[in-house]
Amino acid sequence: MACPVGADVELAAKIISEGGLVAFATETVYGLGANSLDPIAVARVFEAKNRPQFDPLICHLSSREELNNIALNIPDVASVLAEQFWPGPLTMVLPKKEIVPDLVTSGLKTVGIRVPKHPLARKLIKLAGVPIAAPSANLFGKVSPTTAQHVADQLGDRIDYILDGGPSEIGLESTVIDCSSGIIKILRPGGLTNEELESVVGTVEMAKDSDHPHDQSQSSPGQLPQHYAPRTKLILEKIPKRPLNVSRAGLLSLTSPKNIDEFDAVEILSETNNLKEAASNFFSSLRILDEQELDCIIAVPFPEEGLGRALNDRLIRASQKD
Ligand code: TXA
Ligand code: MG
Image (cartoon, rainbow, N blue to C red; front, side, top):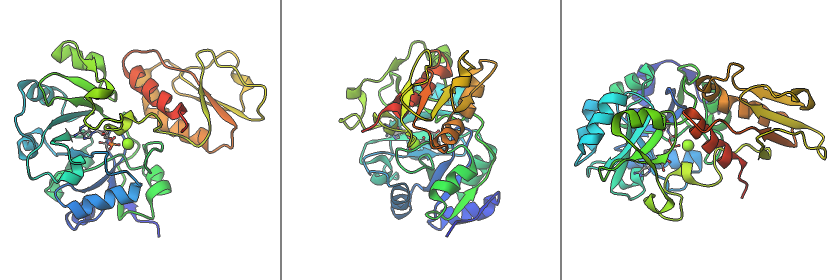
C-alpha cells in the first residue's frame, strides 16, 4: 500500500520517534530517515532500500550545536567548516561517540554528519528530538530523488510517510569530506564545490580508494563504480552524435547542440549555461529520459569546475554497467 504524502511535520516526527521510516525533503535530495539511535529503525532503512550494510549512513542534526552529542575529538578545521557551511550541503566524517550504533556507521569508528538547510528537514529533526540517519530515498544504486513523487514511485509501499517540501533546490547530494584526521579529503564531490571549500581551508584533495574506510572502494556509496544508474544505457560524448544503429536515442546536455533535432528525446539542463540550474534539473531529467523507452542516452560531460565536477562524477557512475 502506498504511504501518505504531505507536509505534516508533527506526524512525521512522531513516526520517527516511534521507530518508523519517513522520507523527507532536503535541499540536496530527499532522504529516507529513521531515528539514528534506534538500531532496529536503522535496520529498516537498509531493508527498504535494499542497501548493503557495508555502506554507512549520514546522521542529520537540526543545528551545529548538536555536533558534540555524536562526534568526538572535533578538529578546529571541522568547527570552522561547520560555522561556515552548516546548514548546507556538506557532510563531515568525524570520530563517533559510543551512542551512535555500529549499524549506522557500518562498524566504522567515524560517522558522517550534516545539518541540512531545508527548514522542514530541520524542523523534523528538532521535533523528533534525535539525530536522523538518512541515505538518499531511492533503491540502492538507482537515481536519487529530488521530489516527493520520485520517492513515492520507488519506495511508497515500503515506508511510513513522505514529508513533501517541494523539489530539492540543489538537486545533488552533499559533498562528503573526511575530517577525522584534521586533513580534509573529499570522499564524494557534491553540492558544495571544491572552490567554496578551498576559500576557507586552502587546497583540498580528492580521496584515493585507499582513503576510503572499507577497501574494495565501496566505503562511500557514491564511490561504487556503478551508482545513480538509469535502466537505459548511458553513453558519454563530448560532441554528441546520434548512433545510427538504434531506433530511439536520447540526449542529456547542459546546452543545446547544433544537431539537437537528430535525437528522439532531449533534456537540456540549462539554456543559460548555469551549472546550479543544471544540478537542480539533473536527476529529474535523467528519470524523464529513462522513462521513454530509449535504446540509449547520449550525455555530454559538464565543464570540470564548480558543480560540474559533482555532475561529471554522477554521469560517469550512471554510465557504468556491471
Ligand atoms: O545530500 C545527501 O548527502 C543526502 C541527504 C539525504 O542528506 N544523503 C545521501 O546519503 O546522499 P547516501 O547514504 O546516499 O550517501 C552517503 C555518503 C556515502 O557515500 C557514504 O559512504 C558516505 O556518505 N559516508 C557516510 N558515513 C561515512 C563514514 N563514516 N565514512 C565514510 N563515508 C561515509
Ligand atoms: Mg545515495
